[in-house]
Amino acid sequence: MAGKREKPEDIVTKLRQVEVLHGQGLSMADAVRQIGISQHTFYRWRKQYGGMNRAQLSRLKELEKENLRLRRAVSDLTLEKLILTEAARGNF
Image (cartoon, rainbow, N blue to C red; front, side):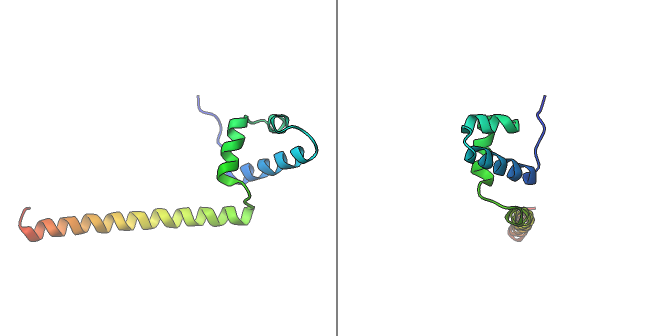
């Protein structure tokens, strides 16, 4: 059974909560446990989203969408080029 997926905005909020709790004197393990995630999940999230605010997160989403669109365009053009080179050789 798959676990629930957190939205990136919620992840950034939870990372901030852990920072606040840790700053108040709780150990990192206790702070992470208090917000309801495992330490492994916390460190994975911190590696991916650490230091981001909501504006940077929305910009990251926009860039990922644009990157996906550009990758599709390049793959379509590459496929068209391969088809045309095969047709030019007469191997169709």
